[in-house]
Image 1 (cartoon, rainbow, N blue to C red):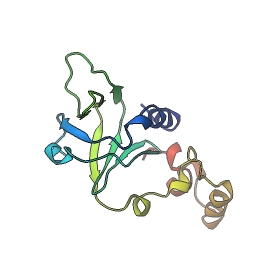
Image 2: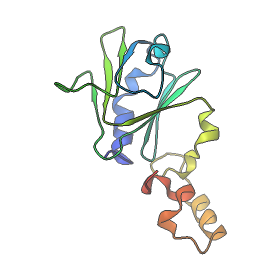
Image 3: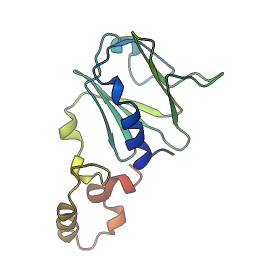
Image 4: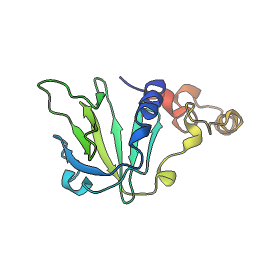
Length: 153
């Protein structure tokens, strides 16, 4: 189950896709119209907790790998249809296998508290302590707004 450090590694491995235009999207996800992704350019690739986020101009995709999810960069699993496959003009591709794919149409900064991700360079331990002090009866390891990547988001 990819999470935290694994998703930071995925984000780093896929950094070369930022700026590339999707020429074809395929897969067996029913969460969005795959044809609508063709022609969209990847603006950024982010991770937050157990979410891998593909940001584009009008929509972003949230990938949650659940329990058995996986991915392939410029490769495919044999005899397995990807949940989502993004293909690019230079022949490169990103393939995601058993995972949840959800479109996000809202601003990502309004949707995510990037400072709550302990794997983020913007994570602020002082801010986390302040949030914990504001809710003294809370079990800290369940505090999704403080340590979300440690939880089951």
